[in-house]
Image (spheres, rainbow, N blue to C red):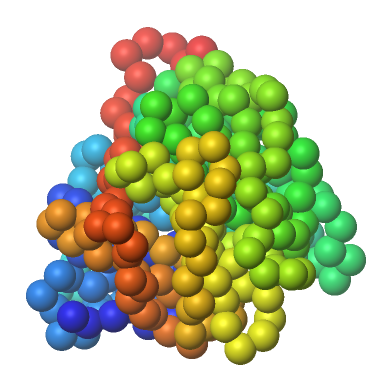
Length: 291
């Protein structure tokens, strides 16, 4: 099957049966259909840092300082297309030039949780975590500040939020209430399988296990699968030292693809593990005044 190019923010689109990912360096968004021979590329005025599919069929896009929603469908066929048009949903850290939006994912209730990263030379931990929803707007989560927010994902029941600082090698867990945008009982969940490794991405599969993509700056990265209690079940060597993002996809969610600095690649899934689809972002307008 065709594979993604190098990039970030790989997501499976169950409605369109294809893959989305971004390439921030070229301000490009890519789409690869399940039977396509080559990905479709669309350019934006700013770099897409994270994304999510929406319940309406639209796309939620995270740029450096703002979350946006596409105001008309984005063509996923090759050839000339209309210029992508987006409406701003919220602006984040407008007064802080050193931060930009990084990783993000919808929670099980359809709200979007995302984090920021320090893009300045000082690399101080000034990145934060937020939740955005149509009914509440943007709310800051009471999580520790980080150099670079990464690996955001959720347990099957939605009550546990996993997150990491890409500058370090530990995936953390926190109790999570989506309606209240509250977190509690923070604890380390799993350490990286390699010494001095950084945690770049994580996801939860259909069996409730947590996959962690890690890079240590050497010749290879590592993909580790952990049970819900944090026990490491296996570790797989990857052909890329910086596996930036990953997603299960395909009609049966049994194909695990990753993207990194060297391009896209497919990883073997042990024990017949299959993915758990992301909940689409709930982009329906609230029925009453925003609370």
